[in-house]
Length: 84
Image (tube, rainbow, N blue to C red):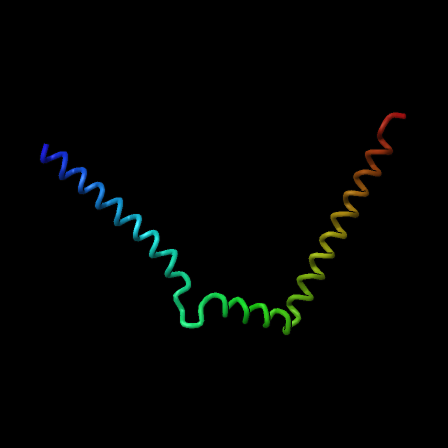
């Protein structure tokens, strides 16, 4: 009986330690004085003023245009192959 109590307490203690360690690790990711929000604001500001944002938007538009051209070409090829 005592052995089961000690084993149960040890398991409970181990689970609690693991659980608390997981929680601390997530909170420690953003434990700086300025914080993650300020880092995000600076990153967005830098992206807007260094022309990285315009390049990313342009690359995204190019990808969308290429996808639309490919889709149209596949639809045209499929309509040509379809029996009439």
